[in-house]
Length: 242
Image (cartoon, rainbow, N blue to C red; front, top):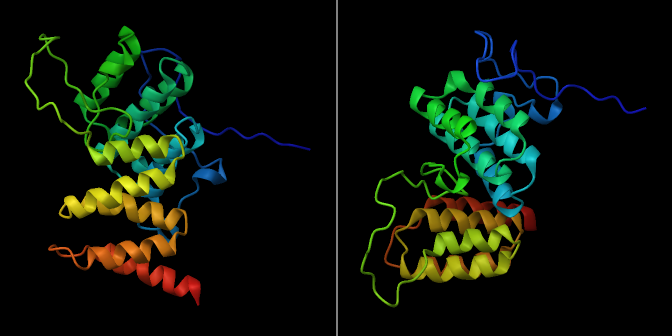
């Protein structure tokens, strides 16, 4: 027999904009999927959630896990980004779960962040105009302006940011293409730590020890201090291959 338990408990008395004084509680203890304890949390748990979401954007449970982890860890900016990414993916759907996530995490958001989310939910704003921050995955963090059109002269050979391009490949599960983009970008821009981090996460999640070894040897020849994450992942592969 299958027993269903309530996934999210949000203490509110009204199911509308006027939340009661108790609506800033966010409890997920009824589900093992959210039963995180401090002594069991890996340091890169949040990164793993973000990588999973970029690969499978419509996996709702991963979005909620990311939100809850940020809430529990008191990561205000990352929490706001996680909420924005959820709203972007839902794109106007799932009003009930959206309200629960926003009102449930209100106590960990700044007044400005909460007002932005509230405005989006109540004024039917185009999701493309929803501004995120540096931790957002599915929004570029656009800021509203009265100048809807601005002429900017750019070089004809302007290239896309390799990190964004890699995320696009990851979204469609084209992981080999994402690796190739990041590997080339690191050779050109070895000082960009986020390129290293994204590539290393791909190597680890796909257990690509051969690709890692080839790129490791290349990075050691670059005129840049190698991030310690390379050594950590090398130790991981060495232990796994024993």
